[in-house]
Image (cartoon, rainbow, N blue to C red; front, side, top):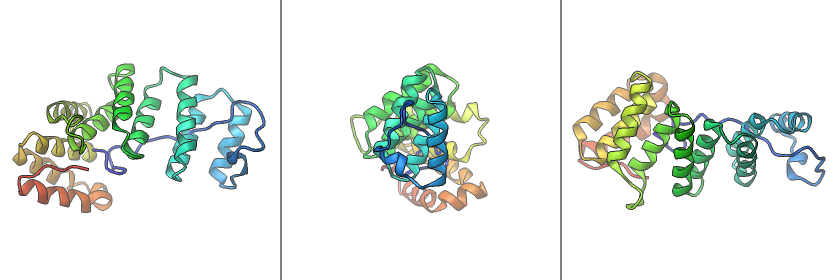
Length: 214
C-alpha cells in the first residue's frame, strides 16, 4: 500500500544537497531547523556521501519542500546510481507529489532491478498499479503479483503490505480476498491506529463490490 503516505511505504530517508562549495545564497543555508542544519553541516564536511543527500531529501519531503527534496534525491542517485533504496525513495516522492506516476513506476522498476529483494519497492509499485485513477497505468494483475510477492518476502507479517494485497485483490474483482486481507491488516494495533480510518473506508467499498482508487 502507498497511501498518502501509507503505513507500508513510509520509509524514505533524509537527504542533502550542497556539493562541496560554500553557497551562502542557497536557501538551505538559511534554514534554522536543527535537523536540516545538522545535515547541511555533515554535507559540507563530507560532500560526496550519497546517503546524506538521501537522508536530507527525506527531511525536505517531510517539510513539503519538494523542489529541494528532488534535487537531493537526484544528487544521491548521481553519487551512487546502484543504490536501490534511493530509487525507491524518489519513486515514492514522485507518486505522492502531484501523482507523477510514470516517473514513480520507472524509479520503482529500477529499484527492483538493482535489488530484486527490495520488497518495499515491490509493494510500492503494487499499490500504485492497483489504485491509480489512470486507466492506462492501472494493472490489477501485475499489482496482485507484486503484492503477493512482497507479502511472501515478509512472511505475511507486514500489515501495510496486507493492505496493498487487499486493494490488489479488489482491483481484479476478488472482493472476498480483499475483505479477508484488509481485515487481517486491521488486526495490527499500530496499523489500525495510524491507518484504520482509511482501511475501514476500503472495507466498505469492498463489501459493496467496488475497488479502491486514489
